Figure 1 (cartoon, rainbow, N blue to C red):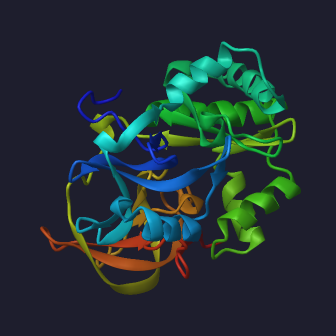
Figure 2 (figure 1 turned 90 degrees about the horizontal axis):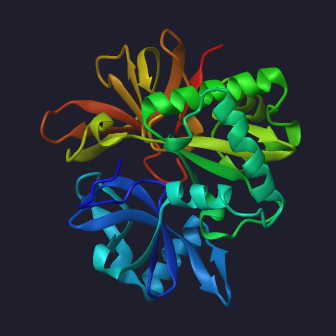
Length: 317
């Protein structure tokens, strides 16, 4: 699953000697560095989670070596030299440890209940991992359970396992409270009704005994596309179109091929719009147009900035 020369995958965490923990966001090396985003800093004997604004401020003031401007993506993010990494937190290893240890709190207990439910309904435990706050033992009673699924086929089997378990009553769709919390955290361009309608049919998240969990996909090496291509931003566009291919809808970034000559590809770097639409559906999209420097082909980007203001995908209902 992992490349021995560059074993870093999205949803991994990497830790530096300065006491910084970054979430890996890119499959490939960027001039030998790991593409990532700062998420935690040491705070005494624990870790403090940072939002985007404070993460950028801290690096600008104290650790500018971890700021990175990508010519390939015409975007700014964070990047860490491999030689600066002192610990590599891998989700698949953490899940194994968690399942073979006594539960230290209620969240770990629920995790140990959740995995057998998913496996009984068709999920492959060899393709699962544990990320988010639980990856570094920083969960609280209000934390979510963030699972990783490696590979498209394994991910779709896990989605179906969630759907079946919800239908059987072993898991639950998000309550209004959990949905509102999820909606407020995403802070997207949809209203709550629109957001809930789209989210409830994805089956990439649900609840176990009042605790939200979600499943996020990490592609296998042979599933990756569009590597090492350079893009330049071209302006903004909003239009209505039909989805003609959705097989990468749950990738990160999510990709939808649409019936539009100018921008036949819609790409979402925002998790809100992963799995948002299906083949044959008519969607309204708004985002930033990017042009492939080598081919001249354009695509529409949702999430051209981390806040993705004014950018969205929604099914016309």
